[in-house]
Amino acid sequence: MLTVEGIDVFIESSHILRGLSLSVGPREVVCLIGRNGAGKSTTLRTIMGYLHPRRGRIVFRGEEIQARRTHEIARRGLGWAPEDSGIFGDLTVAENIEIATWTQPSGRPAAERVEGAYAVFPVLRGYRHRKGPAMSGGERKMLSVARALALDPHMLLLDEPFEGLSPAIVPAVSRGLAAITARGQSILIAESNVNHVPAFATRLYVIERGEIIFDGPPAAVRADAGAMRVLEGQ
Image (cartoon, rainbow, N blue to C red):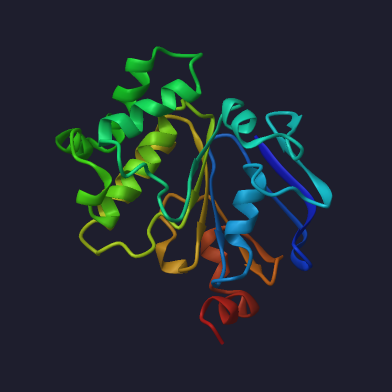
């Protein structure tokens, strides 16, 4: 589904990602875990075309996309929910979700895609006419993912979907992500807290200073002393 091969990414003169490689297969839920500043968001933003690697390549569904523009990548089936949610505050919940069907006009009927987004996060139905400033942080996170789902993507990139959420809202977000995987869509999640890794995750990568230092099943990371030192901030 997605393969990132040896990418080097610079922001101005700073070398942020160093030969980074990872992959996400069909129906997989892969988590990229690391401390703040380790390169998680940069990795996702590079995959989505906001940044371009100086070296390496990114292949999605058999096609190289590292030189593509963000809207072209989205139309090829990658949905994106950024760390700050990125919802349009002047639009209602319904309008935020529906706008994705304008971005990706082909494929399944727009009404079917919108209904599918509400099915994953049913609480949003009651907020259809509410605007962004009147929503909690958790509700904005759910809306961001729902909007990405309305693109009808093959895969989702989620940046810190659990960060800053109250304990009461975490289960609802987790259930929504589980429902997405049950529909057959792959997910790549960036998280800074290993305790936020959902139980249905299939693999983990640990990133430190722009390099992958662990790749394996979730159960194995706690047995890796080096990875746990990084994740525990030692």
